[in-house]
Length: 380
Image (cartoon, rainbow, N blue to C red; front, side, top):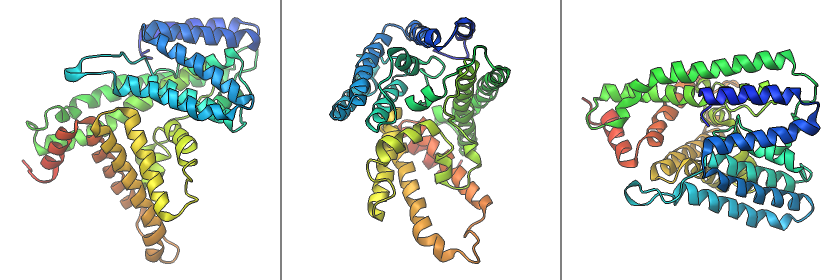
C-alpha cells in the first residue's frame, strides 16, 4: 500500500471514523485487525495471502512459546527466514523472470513474526488474543514499509479512551502532512539530481558528486517521510508506533548515526541477533565479528544482490573500525578530557562515509565500482 495515494487516505479516514465510533477495545481491536488485513490484501494483491498464511503460523507458534514450549522458537524462526529468503532472493530467475511474486512488505512482516516470538520466548508478552496479534501484524500504517514493531510495545500503547484525544488528532495530522511534504516535495526534488548514478559511464565527476549528495538527501526524505506518514496515521488511531529516525545526518560518529537511522530495524537486530551473539560483553575480536555479522545481515535484508551485502559489510567494517578507535586510539589521544577530534570534523567524516556508502546501496556492484573510479581516480 502506498501511503501517499488517495486510496490509502480514504481507507485511513473510513477506518478511523468507524474505529472511534465503536464502544471500546472489545470491539475496536477485532475491527482494526479485520480492517488492516482487508486493506493489506486489497493493496497487496494475491501474493498477500502468503503473508496471511505466515501470520497464522506465527500466531500459533507465538502462543505455543508463551505457553512454555520455548523449543518452538528456533525452528519457527527458520521457517519464517526461509519464507523471506524464498520471496526476496529466489523469486526471480534469469533475465529478470519472476518465479514468485513477493508479498507487500514481506521483509517487515517477517520481522514482526520473529519479534513477537522472541518476546514470548523471553516472557515479555503473554499468549496474545487473535485480534491483538493480527492487529499488530497487519497494522496498515506500518505493514508495507515499517517501522518494525514490538508486540509488547504495540499492546502497551493501545488507546483506551472513549474518544480520540485532540492532541493525538492534531499531532497525527501534522505528522502526516510533514511526511507527505518530505516525499512529494523534497524527495522528488532531489531525484533528478541523483540520476547520475543511472549512467555512471556518461556522467562527469561533478555530476556524480552532486548525485552522491542528492541521493543521500533523497533517500532520507523519502524514507523518513514515509515513516512520518505511518506514525501520523497510527497517531490518528491513538497508537504511538516506534520512531525510525532522529536527525541521523547530524550525528558526529557512525555509532550515533545507526542509533538514529532506521531505528526500528537496528533495534530489532540488536535484540534478535547482536545480543544472542554476546553483544559487547565478549572479547574484542568477537565484538568486531558481531558487528560485521549484524550489518551483513542488515544488508542482505534489503535484498539478495551482491551490492546490498557489500553495503552491509561496508558499514559493519566501519562500525568495527569506530569501536577500535574508541577502545584503543581515542583514550591515548584524549587530552584534558576533551575529545580527540572536534564534533564538526566527526560530523563531516561520518556524513561522507554514509553518503559514499549509499553508492553501494543504490548501484549494482559493477556500476558502483565505476562511480568510485570516476569520483576519485578518473576526474573529468
